[in-house]
Every structure is written in structure tokens, then in C-alpha cells.
Length: 364
Image (cartoon, rainbow, N blue to C red):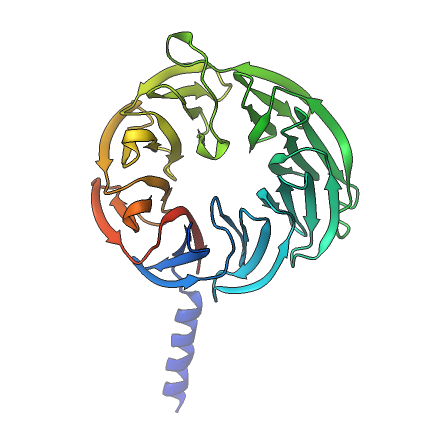
């Protein structure tokens, strides 16, 4: 009996000390089906239905919470493990972006020209009317920052209850910026905003509360036609990669936004995505080159591989666990998987309807 008990204790100790292996689950937007396809272990296992208008649907994860916004203004809170919808709340007729705070969710709205502050279980806290379409919503410390497309300004809110309970946001500062801001990103303490009508982007130092404008040019010093959504930019520690809309190139800048060079590409680039180790950049294209992606070595700044698929590529996402790159091939109803160690097409995943955005939930 003692021997049996000892064996049980040793076995239990070994299992307790063995770390669980991290896994990935893919949630893929099915644009025309108001649904999410769920891919595990290389196969489409399930579909979450009735997720509203999935044109430009976005999914974000925070721990074991998942949130989605639909084009028609719904925020959906769901459990990414059980894949069950928990709550939903309609903020407007058209929502464009959202962020997840420690104790709130904030949504930037287009059509009713407001920003909604909700609890994590989607109960309304406050609706902030701006009189403008709102975009580029981000969080920095106790601040909530967003751009007002119709008013050419960036608004910074501060949480007066920071660390004490539900947020109480009030306007802290506003900056007049370039014409028609439309998207933004955060890098360290900098809020970087792009414009439709000004051939530049703006940088707000959120520690110093100062604004500067940086001109962006393409090949032969020509202005860029427009800067695409910042979800399409890629940032490493030392370099920034920008698709040059209207030019067959990816523009490379240093961390201070000083121009380094243009990497010539097959077509007009739309989307760029850095590998987790920052060694490679995947680039998608528009027009006749929609079915193509190219891979750039970020050290040599040379194209090392070109892939052409059976339909339009709408999105791609690097695995954070394996040497894999997932590619949404929309009109082929497939998610294709590239082996990024030896650079070949490893798998085609079927039973996905008109896929676009790919979002990866990592868990143990």
C-alpha cells in the first residue's frame, strides 16, 4: 500500500510540475455569413453564427475574454474557450474600432458620431457625443485617445477614477491635426495618426503632450496618394514598414521615421505583417495582384519568396507558436498555411466561407 501511495504522489508531482503546452485557436471572419469559422489543429471545427454584419469585423482577446465588433455597430463579448456568446450591445449603426481596458471597453462610432464607454460585460457607462465620425481609438496609461475624422482633431480623455473603480473619462487635451484623420496606432508613448487629405502623418508624444507632422513621400520624392490603415503598417524596434499606396513599393523608415529606402514589389501593396521574430515581412496586394503575397527579408530588405493563390488574399496572420503563416483566400473559400521555415504551401484549410480577418487566441 505504501508503495502504491508513493507512486501516486510521485506521479501527481510530475504532472503538477509539467508545464501545459500552449495552443492556438483561429477565429476567422466569414464576411458574408455573419459568422466566425474556428480552426484548430489545421482543421475547421466549428462556426459561431449570428455575429451580425462581418464586413470589416474585428476580434480582440484579453486573457480569456474575447470581444468582436461588427460593421453594424454591435459589440459581442464571448468565451473563446467554449465559443459561446456571453453578451452583446449595439452602440450605433456603424462602429469602426474598439479597445479593451482593465475595467472597460471603449468603442469608436461612425454614424451617431460618438464614443461609447462600456463595462467589461457590456453595460453602458457613458456615451460621449463628438459631432464627428471617430476613428483610431487607443489606450495609453490612464488616457483614452481617438481621432475625429470630420473635425481634424485628436481628443485625449483622462480617467479621473483611474485605479479606483469604473472609469470616469473627461477631456484632457485636444490637438488640431491634418485633414481627415482616419486611423492611428500607438508605439511606446507616441500616438501616430494618418490622414486622407494631408500627405503626412501626425505624431503626438503623450508624455510631453506635443504634436509634430511628418511628410511621407514615395519613389522619386513623389507624394504618397494616401496612407493606408495603420493596421497595415508594421513596426519593429528599429524600422517602420509602410505600403506605398499608388506605388509598387514598401517604404522603409527608421524608428525616428527617417527614410531608408523603398523595396520594390510585384504590385500595389495593401497590407504588411511582420513575423514574430521580426525577420520577415509578408506583403499583400490589390488589383490584378490580389492573389499574391511576397515575403521580404527585413535585414537585407530583399524579396525572398513570392506565392500566388487561387483567389483574392484579404488577410494574413503569423503563428506565434509554429513556423506558419495563415492566409485568407477569400473567393477560394480557403485559409492556406505556409511553412515559414522552408517556405512552401503546407496545407489548404477548407469549409471556410469567404474568409477575411484572421485572429489568433493563444491558450494553455
